[in-house]
Length: 114
Image (cartoon, rainbow, N blue to C red; front, side):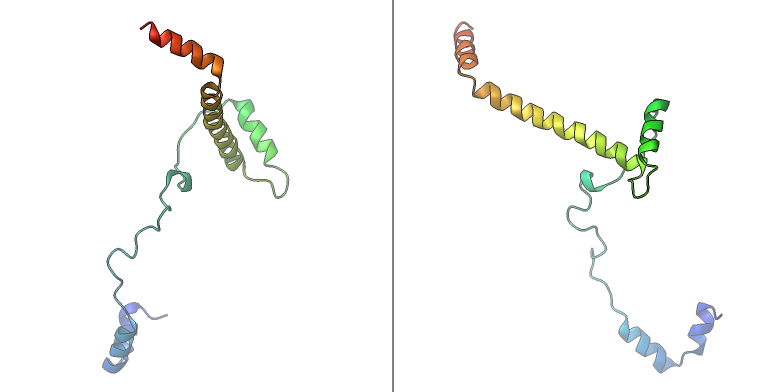
């Protein structure tokens, strides 16, 4: 197998020019990440985490069947579900409060006394 320098030595000057003509300079910044590629939802971040042994065993057991997602993926999925439910619950609570006429009347009376 030839090393890079031995390969270059075997090329004639015309062949080398031909190779250089095929090469192109990339525009500045073309190597940057695509839009949205660096959003936190699309990035995996390595952490060290202490879990209770039974929790870890539970997810490892769930990952055993063929075609099951790896246990780390399953843990991530469950954490995401909790996170998304919390934000949905908060939005639902806000909607319920703003549509509760009795609450709004009581709030109006309370604010009038301040």
